[in-house]
Image (cartoon, rainbow, N blue to C red; front, side, top):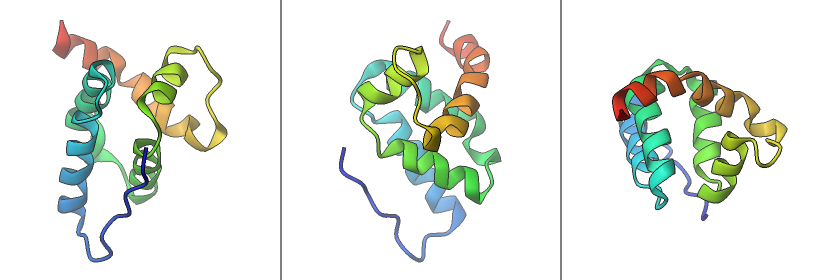
Length: 98
């Protein structure tokens, strides 16, 4: 996936809306549901460092993120915190989907 640089003068609200859209419009339905629901329920609570980590994760291909979340492949160290945050949020996500 092509890395999309954030605009330099982007305020927090605009960044959150952009990341929410990127989380819901992934291309792989499973990732849309997981990342989109995470964005809806927890993205606004992240601090700047955690937003940076989430944005770095959004630059990875869906297939890789799904393999890391499912445990099919080991998670790279650079994405462990962001993925653990998403995994901890899965019970809240699944209650919205079911």
